[in-house]
Length: 155
Image 1 (spheres, rainbow, N blue to C red):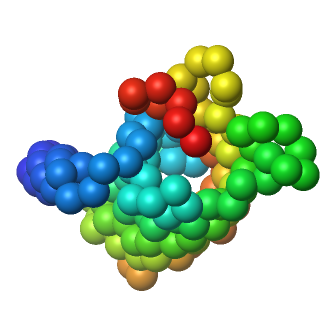
Image 2: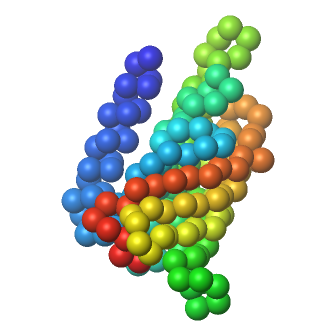
């Protein structure tokens, strides 16, 4: 429990510091899949963003921080459609065989993104493989995220 409180505190401080350093779009919402939880994304520039995921799944609690690079595909498809790729790291705990173990590792992410034109909503579908330093890896992690776009949907 102490690890969860400390992790949430550190994540809150990091997100607040990032939001104060550079103006940009902020998105927050839910992530369905692995990990299941909440997600927040902050755009440093038009193309680069940081994402934080706080998730729980299979007796595992994790906090993930990711850097992403975004490409706009509106000219080739429909307005608001794009894709992204990046990477980062995670920490957390996993309960197995009656004991709780520390979990840490690196993550990749690649996905598609859609920003609705008339409502402040972002949807994304991604693949997020995680390599754990302290146990078996999760290479088949997929998720669907729905995020509210604060301040409107300025792409």
